[in-house]
Image (cartoon, rainbow, N blue to C red; front, side):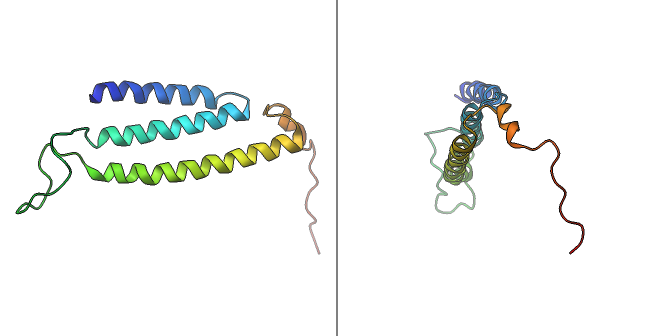
Amino acid sequence: MEPVFAVLVGLFFAAAIYLMLSKFSIRIMLGIAVLGNAVNLLLFTTGRITREVPPIIPAGMQTLPAGAANSLPQALILTAIVISFSFLAFLLVLTYRAYQDIGTDDTDEMRIAEPDKPQLPPMGY
């Protein structure tokens, strides 16, 4: 089962990089979302995917049995899902406001908002 997830993680990373290299901000945001899902799936895969031995320490033992799934990556994934959702919501609002002000989501056209020769701040007060 792990080799299938390893290939899937590779496909997710490839799709995320392809989307993030786009010049449109919506595609960049989708690439960031796919990248977050790829990292979550990678963490999930590293925690061993088993159903036979639950991640519970039996009575009289100090550690998990050898074939048990690790529960730490699962806890990290839950935290990462919340953080990535809030980050994606922030990026969505930021992109929408930039689209409202500039009128495009093309990053090459967004350079028009940057002045060619910015004014220097005052040197003395």
